[in-house]
Length: 499
Length: 115
Image 1: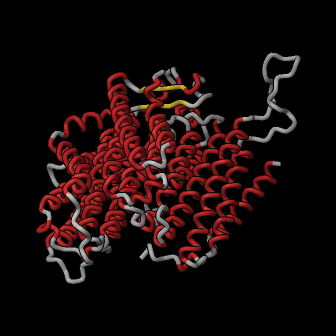
Image 2 (image 1 turned 90 degrees about the vertical axis):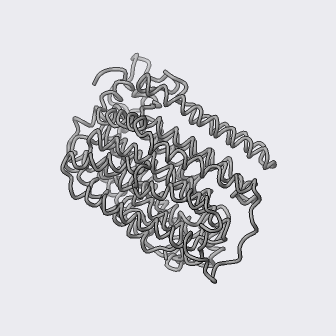
Image 3 (image 1 turned 180 degrees about the vertical axis):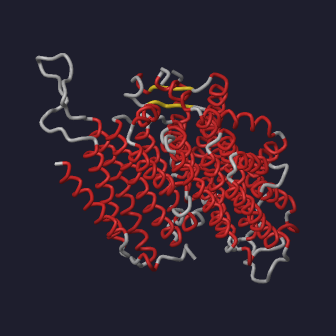
């Protein structure tokens, strides 16, 4: 029993409620939202410290004994994901102080963001499969509103695709839950892991495919990703950044959770399928990015490509592979968010996201150039930045079990990623400014510019630290990977007995 | 009874899929509603149907005796119905806004974000 496990869900809920009370005052909402996000980060760090020193932390809600009640479980993967949610929440909220249109703030932007964090943290921490569905919906409904806020035509079109496909995915998830309850009579994930071991293997495979499709749509893997590049570039940049950092990753987290805890009986089928999907996701994502000239669209396609790497670690299904997935998740969330944030700064300075209309940014602001290069090189995997170590772990994990094809794909995709990043560098930063570039917006004041750049610098520093001192992060990722490969520990922590 | 419900669920999924593939926004919404109802019925059926045995302890026993209906799936469905209803209501408003902004209810014409 540890009440700390519930705090990452309760703090955003409380923050959203308080911010709603003072919805007339923008200053009040801003202060409440920032304080809430800082508290959330502090609390999640405490949770990570506890779960790494004292083992898996479990809270049985309402003191109902598992598997009858709902359990909240914080193992290493969950705690790491909660910490990264807190970090992203705080940086994106600081960024939106400068980037946001005041109209959105009056419209409930800050409460919605905190409801989104609550849904995301709930999905990371829950140990009950139906409860996970509920958290998904909490997260989705706030993301629907954030996505369509502003009512531009492109946003409406993007939102229709996003809402339809996510609703459909929830329906498939729900159908999977119904059948799994019919087969085992339980919804607790630890209990499911025990009971599904005796079930008919054909039924298990059918169920695993249902969950694979449901979570696959949410995480944007091949061939289910089409909603992502159609909608992610339409909302304001701060919203795009938080979507890019958290939403697809919740899908990937769920994939990792169910395919390391529940569906582990037939790895020849399920995990080989995951490896194939991973390879195809990496390739299609990066090729899609190569064809585009709009910064946000290029980055949206890269989200898909990077999801492939994370799924690859899961498909390898070894401790090192899963540790690679965990390391890659953390690295990718930080770096990808940072790239979107830099994209927003470019738009603020030059009034466009389109590479053909941009140019000469390096001359205008050399520091922004450096701040773009750090995440760009990191995402391509150039040492000594964080992406290099993440890819090294995955590729070593792949070579260890002789999965040469997917390793080859991963390496080729890295080069193509570098191509995309150099394309942005070349077109936006180095090329002289073209005549077609739109009229420059008014120059931001020094204070405004520092608000824009503060989160970018923070995330860039973390990227460099992860690159220069990888041992600490590697160690904790490795322990998370071993914990995932050994579900008995999780089951014992939740059910209180050895299976 | 299970067989009959299985056909009903299959019919709902088929009709839902057909409606989802139509180009009209309103038909898309109807498709979403059908698919979510099919999922609810699927939970109800797959958890097993027990008729005329409510999960109540009678005066002659100290505990529940078999067979009795499982109340949990019904609680799940209730939650799912409420959530599905909320999302459908939001989707209706969203689609109406989209229709007003785009002046169009044909999904094939809404491709500007894909290009």
